[in-house]
Amino acid sequence: MNKILILKTGSTFPELKRQKGDFEDWIMARSSLPQSRFQICNLEEKVLHKVDLQTIKAALITGSHAMVTERPVWLKKAISLIKEIRARSIPLMGICFGHQLIAAAFGGKVADNPRGAEYGAVEIRLSAKARTDRLFSELPHHFNAFMSHRQTVMQLPPGAVRLAQSPDDHHAAFFLPPNIWGVQFHPEFDEPIMRFYLTRHFKVPPGRLNLYLKDTARASSIIRFFLSASLNP
Image (tube, rainbow, N blue to C red; front, side, top):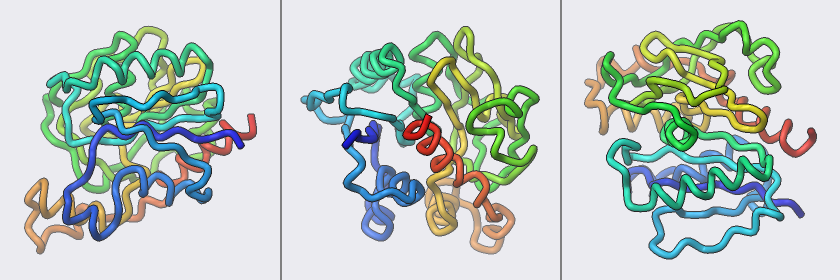
């Protein structure tokens, strides 16, 4: 059976991990596929286990608490693997940090967002190009998605197509032909996860939490769309 590769670039807070699992678990839960279909590659491990890309049908990159600009020690091997995935025409989707990592790997620019951190449920608006995209054409012109980031893709890689923007991020999603997507938002987050990040990471007072929490079911469906398009081209 062809596998779906998840490139793990970090872990969530230990307390949240005990309650809800980790980044890769949230992605698998949103996929509606059995966990047996997935292979996890933890890029933070000192010795990276060899991944047989001939057995991989699609790949996703998780979010992370790391920053692309801080150049973690494993970043070089991650970029090398991402480039090999592209060369083999394996569909790839990066989420948040993964979105930024893809941009940096192929010549884009990542930096602190000059508008500051973006978090909670925000409105995503699709570009005209999204109407013909294999994934985003399934979505309405605007929808809510959970955000949790301080850095952003300031400049897309050469040849990339902007698919969406948010109020504080011009590059909320992009497509890099022929087989790569990046989304700055978190389709794998549910409301309890977002609530934890709002409280613990962004220090939102309890009385204001509901201002940042909205229905994001449309955004969550992008993982299923990606896997459906990848497994049934």
